[in-house]
Image 1 (spheres, rainbow, N blue to C red):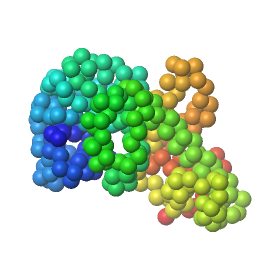
Image 2: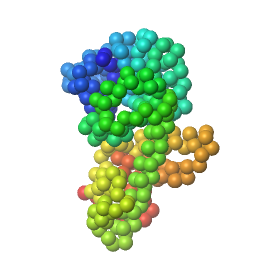
Image 3: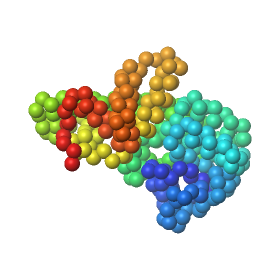
Image 4: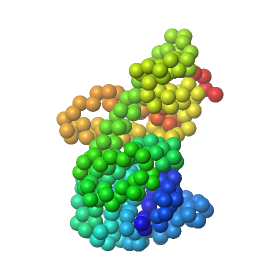
Length: 294
């Protein structure tokens, strides 16, 4: 397919690369941040309108709800270049409510819309093992299935438009609260005098095991907080959760408290750290580090 891919960030660049490897014709939008390799691998359009006009499918992978709105509906945006029958896929993590509104505006142009946010981080993007949570019609999903399979492994049509974003918000709640639990446990164990690396090793064989204990627990012990997924982006996702909770009348008490821990780390200059850096807030409260910084 001819694909316009917008958003060559930490995850978007390898995702677009996998689509190229799968045989698709990829066009990106002119940016100063494009590398020589990007320009060699992809066609370059002057703006999103031009990229969309030449595409059968448009994929967005940008940071937040306002970014999606600007790319789709701003001057020189995707909507200006769409022709009927084009498939628009937003793989960003944004507001489910806004997603439904965006989909209605795209549908009015005779185009299909899918929300397909992902989980798996930079590693999953590079290895093409992302979990992809999709909202939209079965017909649109069928058209996009081969594209998703080039980028991920666990691909699920969750429900109608917006359901993918709702699922991603739920995912981010679980991830954040599990990071907090691992951080709390390792801080406790370390201050009690136990070797946190040995504690983690022991817990990996029991009911407490998880990918977050495996990967993020190791980061907390080895002090490797270079970002796979930044704290500021997880704050954005938890804001979506808390806003949706208010709209639905659903209490999310532990999501709120974990957001405050992220806020404490961000206020101390850690907004760009990996989200495993949440442990720093608990270390401050305990006046004790899980392990000494390298």
